[in-house]
Structures are given as C-alpha cells and as structure tokens.
Image (tube, rainbow over all chains, first blue to last red; front, side, top):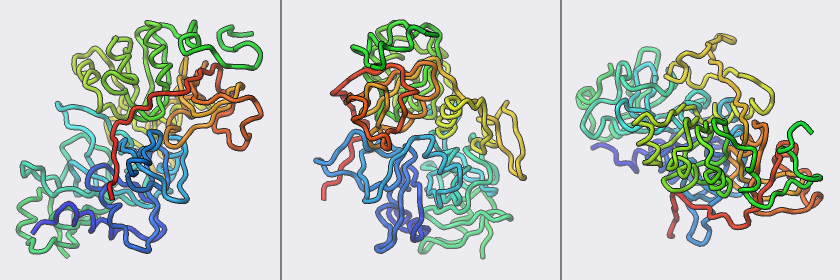
Length: 210
Length: 242
C-alpha cells in the first residue's frame, strides 16, 4: 500500500532532529509540522522573514501582518523573531538552516531538482526555491512518486527547467525513501507491501537496492 | 540643496498625503523598488497614488505583482508597467495575460537574490556572487566565477530611482519600525533608491522611538505618508478551529 499524504508527512518528520532550524515548502511539506515528535524542539523558518512559525491562528488571533511564505495567516511560537527578506536569505544562503523539506516536479539521479516551471504552461516564478536548494545544508524532497497521469518523476535527467543541480540528498515518496548517492538513487525504505518491481515500473531512473 | 524634491521643510519628512508625496518625483520610464510580500506589507496608498499620477513605462522591482484589482495589480490594469523584476507572480490573472501576450516583460529573479540585489544596491555594492541559480535558466548569460572550488554567478545590485515602502511606525525624521512579517522586502527596498517614500500607520515625534528599536534609520527615508488605517487584505485566511 502506498503511503497517504499524512503518512508521507509523518515519515518526513523522522528527518528532523532536536534543535534543528527547518524550512518547509508549500504542499505536503507543510504537513510535516503536525508530526514533530513531542519533546523535540524544531524551529520553523519561513523565508518571508520569520523564525519560530507557529500553527494557524484562531479566528480571534488573525493578524494580516503575520503570514508564512505561502501567504497563509500564521502565529508566533514563544521565542520567534522577524527580520527582513535580505536577512532571511542571508541565513538561508549562508548555510545556517539545517534542513529544507520541499515538493518537486522531477528529481534526477544526480540530485538535480525541477520544481518551478513547466514550459508552455503558466509560469509563476521560482520564489525562494533556488535560494533554498543552493543554501540549506540538507535538502529532502517530499512528493508523490509519479505524476497524477502516472508519469515518472524520478529520472535519469530532468526534462523540466531546473531549480538546482546536485542539490537533493533524499527523496520521500508515497512508495519509498531514496537517497541520492554518487552512483544514483538508492532505495533505503519501502512503503508497506511495495515491491522492488513496482518501484522499477514507476521509476525512469536506475534504482539501486541495499 | 541638490534636489528640491528630495527634502521636506525642516527635518519633518511628513507630507500631507500619498499624492502630494509622489508629486514631482515619479516620471515615465523610472525604475521603482516596492516593498511587500504578496499583499502583506505593501504601501497600498502609495501604489494607488502612483497609479493616479499616470506615469507609464515603469520597471518595478518587487517580489510579487499584487492580485487582480489590488496592490501592484492596479498598475497592471492601467498598463503603466513595462517590466516586472519579481520572484513569484502566480496570483494575478491580468499579469499572466499581459505576460503571455508580450505586453509585459518579466525578469524572474530568485527571491533571496532579489532581496540581496536591493540590499547591495543600497550599500554601494554593484554586484555580488551567489550560488543561487547555478545550472538553471537564471545563470544564463551571467559571469561565473569559482571561489574555493565552488562556482558562483554574478548578480547586480539594484539602484532604483524611487522606492515605495510600508512601515508600521515612524518618527518625523523618517526612522522606521516594521511590524511582524510585514517587514519583508521593505527595509531592503528602502535603502536602494535615490528617493524613498514610506507609508506608515503611526507617526510620532523624534525621540519617541527607542533608537535601539529602529529598523530603518531615517537617512534612507525622504518622505513620509501617514495612512492610519490601511486595508491590509489577506490573501489566504487560514485558521485552526480546535
């Protein structure tokens, strides 16, 4: 059985370590915040200028001046800080963020990432994704193993315009967990009941198994 | 005085309203840096006033392009913008239409690179090297340089003609304090222009702000506009119910 979005988020939360400063991307990565283990201190960074992002506000707490990078209203946790965009990306570019968990359209076996543009379709822009993948110390991609149409997203070479080259360390999909190694993708975990053959059918890249 | 439009009388930088504050300082074809992230922390009265000046062929460096009917979307409707320098423009249908039809030019710039380009421009730094964008479309045509075995690309600082920013509180000398994540690009945009106009919710006397708490020193701010009750539209109103 493939993992649900919640199970994927819970699996991704196991990438967290006590004391980490973490940036979570839009989509499934946002759900990871719900699975931070009790007793573990993880500080969430939002690249619009916030360290110490808390949950969504209650109706009475909504503040138009306090949003996350997805433009959603959020709250502070105790000990939060705010800063300018230049300061925010200084801490990103400077390698001070421990981990970013991001969505993706495609990942190559060399760790190239494409997640911002489909030629001929609506171009929205890269936002902070290029800065994050080039600056954050560890990049984990959290995404469905294939597109909704069943097309492979784990490829020898990305066909979409890149966000970064050689930047992805680990990929968590609904079917498995893979590491990007010097010899390509290495499968390190399977979702329950998923077989090697099933993975190979749904993956264009070469898979190595431990 | 080098530029009569730059300084208000005495040391009070407060102007009667947004329209008056822009009078004589914005012109066709200018490059403007405008603060805000989405609709959070945008100088909303100044954007309306900029539209009402009727200036055209503007290039605007701003992280986003507003939404249809609000923020920088207002300037797109009236075709006053020639080019946007932005990182993300996904919330605006009119923007997309003009971009696809070739009416509007867009330079996509990674968000951190855009912020640093403003910071550098304001700090007298004409360019800087960054890893951001290496191996992507963003790097095409830019100088590449290797430092300690790592490749970087050269990005240029932005020096704008006019910056429009939004702060929470100001004193009459133009010292600014921002609030929450409405700070975003505003402090960086404020530094990078020849003339910076700040829209603020609260205006106090010099001395009323603790010098240690000022985010943008008044040297960067030439004109102030008091807008005590901005609309502050929310793009994605998200709440928890438990």
